[in-house]
Image 1 (cartoon, rainbow, N blue to C red):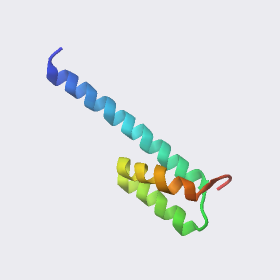
Image 2: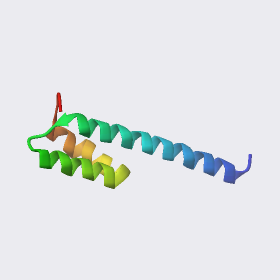
Image 3: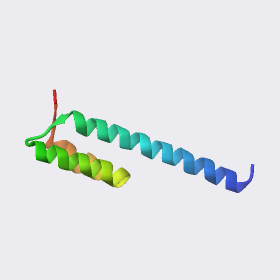
Length: 71
């Protein structure tokens, strides 16, 4: 297998992992309760528009603001 094929396979694998983490972040944010609807919408926009960087910010900052429970 040539180095270009290995590079592409690695790229596809990393992209798949990043997309999976992004989907989990969107679902987690959608199911959390926040003090206001505006805050929930803002975090959803951060996660959706920020892709992997937005998910990282959400996991370290936004998750603590919300609580699990019915939407």
